[in-house]
Image 1 (cartoon, protein in one colour):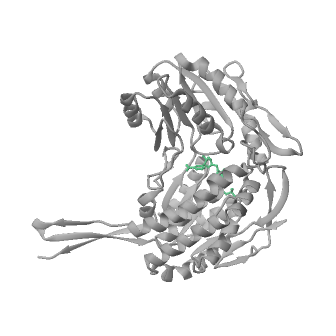
Image 2 (cartoon, helix red, strand yellow):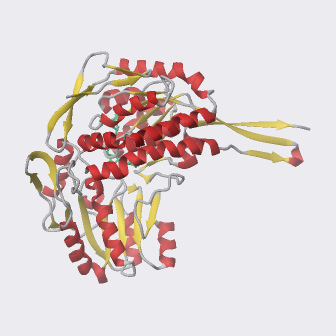
Image 3 (spheres, rainbow, N blue to C red):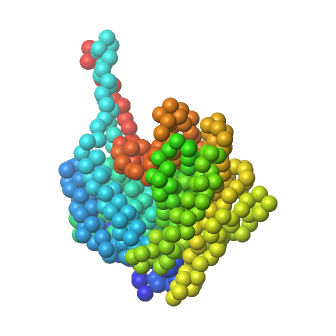
Length: 481
Ligand code: NDP
């Protein structure tokens, strides 16, 4: 049994009330560890450690902060296999995915922000006629909160922690209670890299208690949150009376728009990935596929054939392409969308069933599922399912598909497949999304702004955007007449 502890003030501690939660392996539904069910007092202790570390850390030179972040990146890489095995076991994702995507990206997050901070700048503005010069300072905020979801556990936690500490803040972080393991391992790495105690504190527990205690703490100055839209609303409401800075990266229901003039083979193989990578549990997955009517029937046949070739299996097996869904509750939620379809309007073209994997009969395996829908207004197209379920619909014209793509409450990302330049430019301008991919998907450059519009979030992370988020801006105006 794994015994996960809170990481506070550079040490590992049990929760004050000695209350524990089960850590369940989605591959077989068995409990394999315990994690703290932390209370408000645990959060307060973490806050105090962060507060005590703040003065010294915020005045530590950029070179030194940068060197420590770089060391953390190298140590994650040196421990890649250990982290990948833990992530795969905790989350149910294929080991190949944890090894090639999640853990390398966690290292990249630290490496990227170790460099970005050395290039971060502020502005000055001169008005010669008035003999004034303005200059802008960007100071760290103090103690900040980072709350992350279960789908890309270490990847998204470090996406927040790295820029927060790079800019001189101290952090109280909470990973999802469903996937705490790699966050626990990160504490050891931070100590080994020489991160001063208290700069990063990781408190485990439920969102509704531990998470809420972080968001509602009067002296935690900012919250960087990634998770569901409903949770985001609650966080915004809790944080509002304190006027905290908020960065909310929320849900998505992303369109994947396929025109007949695209590079068909590239589109087909990328669409399989953008639909089902990580069991469809990526906020950027394209879950609504709109296909131009002239190639709709061909696409349908080819897509079903390719999806049918995906190997669903235990996460620990090298050949597995689709692992287990993250938890029983999530599995049941995803399945309820499929079971609840209106069969007069929608048709399951492939999958839609629980899979019993030999030797892992109680694991949360669902076959990749393709559903043909009649209308973009159906529940399957309007609500985020966040699992291996996509819908297909044909379209006749540019105007029709643009309208359907935008006719949803979310606005995170959109993918467009076409070789028509004019259409690419018009769609990029008119799609209501924070991120638009043209003839590709999920190619990420960490310098770019990342985030969504509408119910997909508020603010942008990534690059200098997040360094601005984690700093307080002050303008100084001097008259030199
Ligand atoms: P949740 O919103 O349920 O949880 C996210 C995190 O918030 C978890 O750590 C959770 O803790 C915590 N939490 C829950 N309630 C509260 C609360 N009241 N106060 C403070 N913290 C709280 O999301 P999921 O973990 O289910 O993740 C899936 C969602 O994340 C999907 O909607 C997906 O689209 C979105 N997402 C968005 C991304 C983006 O960049 N826009 C990227 C990845 C995912 P606990 O788990 O312990 O309840």
